[in-house]
Amino acid sequence: MAQGAAGTFEIPLPSDGSGIECRTLANGLSIVINFDQPILGGSASVTAGVATVGAVSYSGDSMIVPLSGVGNGQSITITCSNVTDTAGGVLSSSAVSFRTLTGAVRGNPTVGAADILAVRFASASGFAVSESNFRCDVMCDGSIGAADILAVRFASAAMISLSGNPTTDTPPTISAIANQNAVSGVQTAPIAFTIGDAESDPSTLGITATSSDQTVVLNTNLVISGSGAARTISITPVAGLATTSTITITLTVSDGLKSTSTTFNLTVSPST
Ligand SMILES: [Ca+2]
Ligand SMILES: [Ca+2]
Picture 1: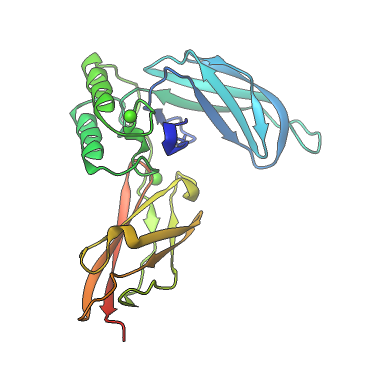
Picture 2 (picture 1 turned 90 degrees about the horizontal axis):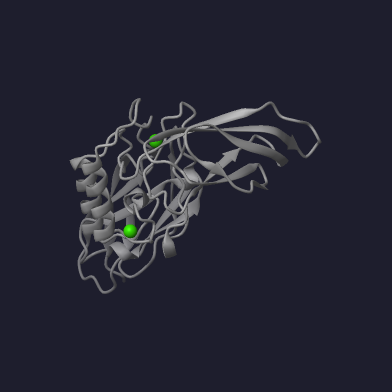
C-alpha cells in the first residue's frame, strides 16, 4: 500500500491466514502473491469475505491483485487459478487468506488502548515512516500524527473483533557485532551484519541505529546500507575530539510488529 512520500509498505501475510491489514481500506489495497517462478497470466477471485477484484497484473514471480470495496472486520480469501508460467504450464490453484481490521496496528484481533498508545508513541518519536513503524500510519499519508491516532481511537470505540488469534509473528534476528574502533572525524569502513525473520522477507525489515553519546557520534552519522539479509553500518564520529572515549551503538531490527536489538562498543580516538 502506498503511504504518501514515505513509499510503499506491505504487510506480510502468513500462510495460516493470520495477517491483518490494519491501515485504511478507503483506497482499496493490492495483494502481492509470490510464486516460485515467473508467471505470465492467471485469474483471481474472492472466495471468502467482502472485496472486489480489479485488473490483475503480473511482474516476474508475482501476481498483483488489486482489491476495492474491501470490508472491515473480515477474513478474506483470494483464490488464484489458471496461473501460467513462462514455459506454458498451468500451476495448480492456490489461495491466500488475510484479515482486515483498521487500527489493529499491533496485529491483534481487537483494537484497544495498546494500539492507541502504540500510534501515540510512534507519533511522538518523530521518526519518519519506515519499515519499522508503517502500520501506525493508519491513514496512509506518509506521516504519523493526530489523524492516525483519531482513526485508531474511533476503531477502538467501534469494538469490532476478528475471530482467531493475533498475527503469527516471531521477533526478527540480528547478528552480533564485535566491538569496533574509530578515529574522530573519519568514517569507518562498512561493518557487516546479518538480519532475518521467519515470516518476513529480509528486504522488508526496518533497521534503526542509535548512539549512546551524541557528543561523540550523532545518530545521523550512523549510516545503514546493504540490502536483503546482508546489511552494513558505517560510522562517522564527530571531528575534533581531544580524548579517547568508548560509547555504545544500538542496532534495532523490526518486522513492524516485533523488534530485536544488539549493541556493540565503539572506541573513538582523537585524530593524529
Ligand atoms: Ca498518517
Ligand atoms: Ca517476524
